[in-house]
Image 1: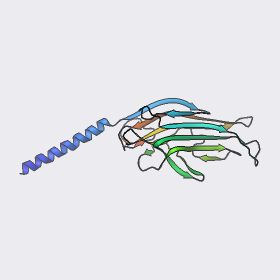
Image 2 (image 1 turned 180 degrees about the vertical axis):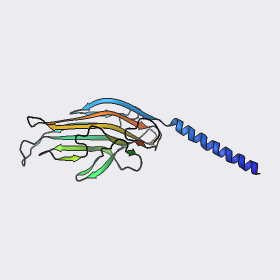
Image 3 (image 1 turned 60 degrees about the vertical axis):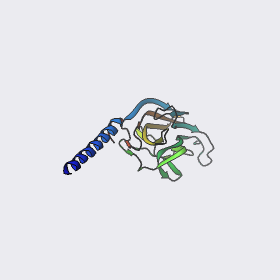
Image 4 (image 1 turned 135 degrees about the horizontal axis):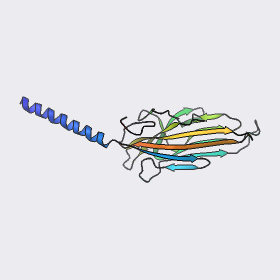
Length: 202
């Protein structure tokens, strides 16, 4: 009887080890390096390579009327637009939620707050002056954290490396650029990823 229990225990351990090794072997972060300048338009990208666009990164200049500070009518907006079921790491601001500018190594997993289904602001800059809303003004190397659904409605986590640059030129005109350097996603459903991570374990 003792030998039978010992044998069952060994079998259980071996099965558990085999499952662990199988899952580890299947774990993979898929990374794609790009060099896209989003200036006055938008760029749709497919994070997980399934042929369906997941997110849209956009940037545009707005013109309006500023009665309190004439000559500062222009403003700059940058946004991320999500398709149904997907989300981006957000935080709350004075004028509503906006996308968080994550530093390299920040965790992206189920513990974060994700805003989804629609347009979400990265930043607003200008508009009767040089006031700004959001965290992204003149940050060359930060990350958007994503939550996306695959065809089976499983949740995956991902990131995109994004930078912004803006200034007022000598003629008083507003100049701005958003650039996308790359993105990656974790192939195992529910498995977190670190901002900027391209390989290894979470």
